[in-house]
Amino acid sequence: MTFIPVRVSSILRPACDSHSSTHIAHIMTELKTTPGRRTVFIHEHVSGGGMAGTELPNSWLAEGRAMLEAAVTAFADAGCDVVTTVDPRVDFHLPFETIRVESRHQAEAILTDMTMRTDFGLIIAPETGGVLHRLTLLAERKPGWNLGSSAEAVALCGDKIATTQHLIRHGFPLPDPIRVDDFGNSICHEGLIALKPNDGAGTVDTFLVPGPSVRSFASRQALDPSRFHCMRFVPGPSAGYSYLCDGHGSAVPVAACRHEVRFELVEPWIYRFQLDAGSPAPVPVDGQIAACREAIRTIPGLRGWVGVDVILDLTGEVDAILEINPRLTSSFVWALNRTNRSEIVSQWLASPYR
Picture 1: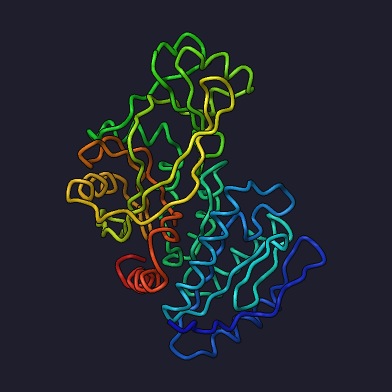
Picture 2 (picture 1 turned 120 degrees about the vertical axis):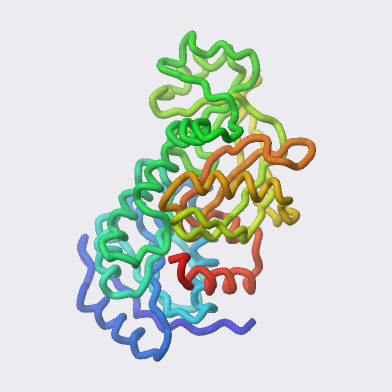
């Protein structure tokens, strides 16, 4: 497939913690001169300047950069004019110029401005610290602009404890949740416990710890029990299934990804989860599709690309639902080729998926 050139801006080089509305207006005037092409603003938080001035976690940066590059190319191939932001510390090889961002404040100001200057917007960000929720609230200021999930759905899915409780109430299989108030005597499970930040993304600060060792490990690592979600470890293949959703319960399967997970020994019998990469998974069987789709249907506002991470049993059926990601996921990169991505984006831009 031949790349469709995207005519986007000269680079913004702000001298202070603000952005040039005049310059952005000039950018949008250029874009609007292309007859019949929709304009889409794509902001990826980690590589796109949302963490300017702070250290970029390697795993987040690798995934974020890959998703941004895949997304801008897919939307361009689908016939859109694309505007995006980049952190000047990140070396991109995009075939067009972009808006350089020097601070988080500037990134959010540009996002707010772009809601009024572009037709649609796509926010790619981790749930950690309420980042995705905060950016989604900004994106919702213009009705119909946000191509992603609603702020309400993001808030629920970004809270792993709340999501677990929600899915259990609806009868879905999940690993046994373990209530933790102080990492103390409440951990009596003799098996392995998976610890992950309650608002975590990816595998950052995710550990596998024997139940009786959780208290001492948490103390040595200075972990805040109020920030962690603990559950019984479920062995088995890990997979991610992705859907295009309409916000009202309809979910069309679009990708399946096998997660390549390894465990890094950090202390005797204690491991850190590492998600190395992913690869296309076999076409999901009906049971896998149905389980994930039914989980999505219980959460109003899931819209656009939604990922469901699961553990499979020996028969290939869903043994446990781990989490629901209300945003673009790395499966968009790992499980699809360029042609697939542009076709999915074309469908995404069609009603009712936006």
